[in-house]
Image (cartoon, rainbow, N blue to C red):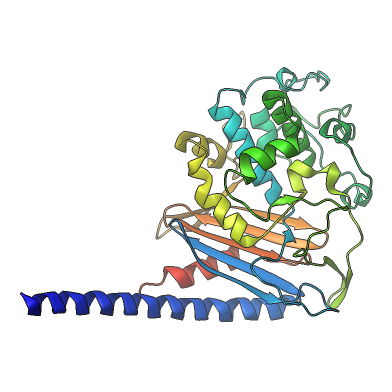
Length: 359
């Protein structure tokens, strides 16, 4: 009996040690991949986080938050996440939908009475899937805006009286301003200010410690310096932006660890059927499929393994971010950088494959 006990103990110890060694080997390989990517992109700083099941398995910073001070990037460094803000906003939509407070297919005036009647009705579902006919930024003066808007209703003045670009549901046209209308619907359905609702009902409940709106007057110790490429290899500090014209569609700050936490904890606040609504790609009225759901895109990464990813990127002056989730494998990967560079699902999947290797 004693021999059997020690044999089992040995096997358990060996298994734990082997598992730890395999994990460390994968992290080392992943680290080398990100170091190479960091060097190739020429960005001052990159941060990365990987989660599997309910756990954070790796988080690390590369490079610096500021080229002058040389302060290193850490997992606590806070970056602009651009349009991943849409993904966060979609969770608020889901929460209100779960509670029966928001009908995704009701005319928007039910929640935003000051939204003018258009030739065709507009719904939250269409807004979330970029099928509502709302325009995007008109020019650089809007995407690089430094004008402050005191409220969601104030920033809606930018598009409130515009004619719809097409009949909703007949085309897909990416629009950050469409998510401003969703923010107004969140206010109307909840009776609360959009930013307050996001903080109380999403960030706090999901324990996102470093996710918040990017306000010019906020002094954050861990916020990175935002940079802009004047030309390849030539960086300058990015011009100041006031993101109050796009809170819901592109105005938040976060960290990769928070973004991983967001995905892992979402089932704690949303029903499975609601998460499916937010992540299942929509179709146009004629049945044509799109790859966009509501704050998430969907893509087949590997047909042989039936491996589907849902993801969203963020591209903004002074930042790039990417959030990538393999539902079947329960793996989440988040990247951030403090300049607008090019990485997306290809790079995220290459990193995922390192952790999916069978030893």
